[in-house]
Length: 221
Image 1: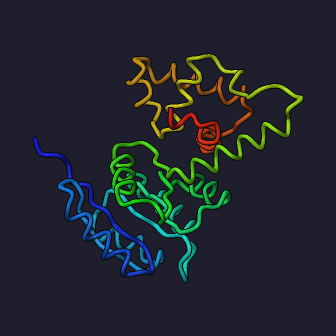
Image 2: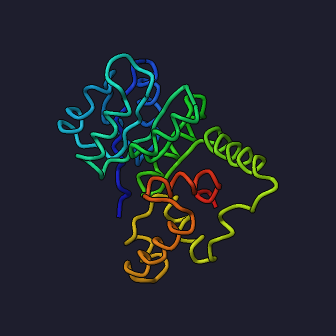
C-alpha cells in the first residue's frame, strides 16, 4: 500500500520562500506542494479550488489579519491542519495561534527537516511546535513557578496519573474518540476524566487545556 500524499499550501508574501519549499518537497515522496498565495485574504478561496491537508501560514503579512482568517478557516474546514510559519516567535502569537485552531507553530529559522517533520506530525493528528516555541513555553512555566515559590507546587500535582495521561493526549491534539481508542476506554469515560481535569485546574475549555499542557511540557512527553 502506498503512503498517503500530504498536500501542502504555502501562505507567505515572499515568493523565494515558497520556491524553496516547493523544491524541498520534491525530494519527499509523501509531500506535494499544492500551491502558494501571498496573502491570507485568499486562503478560503484557495482551499476551495485546491483541496489541501496542511497549510503553512505566515502571520506578519500586509492585508488581512492571519489569525482572523485562520479562525474562519477552522470553522469551515476543521479537517485542515494549519501550522503558523513565522519569523516572529512571541508569547501572545503562540497563545493566539492555539486559540484560533493552529496545529503547530514553527520559526522560519528552523531547518527544512524540522519543517517536514512538523508537516507529517500535524497531518497525523498531533500538534507540532519548534524547539524555540517549546523553549518559550517552558520559560513561562518557570517564571510562573518562581513567582509562587512560597505557595503550592504545580497544579499537575492535583491530577491522578490517568488524568495526566489524558491531559497529555489532549495537548497533542487528540480527540475524545482517539484518546478513548488509545487508552481502551469509552469516550464517555474520557469525558468524565476531562471534566475532572478541568475542575481541578479551574480551566473552562479545551483550548485552555491545550495551552496548559504545552506550558507544562506535557505535549512533548
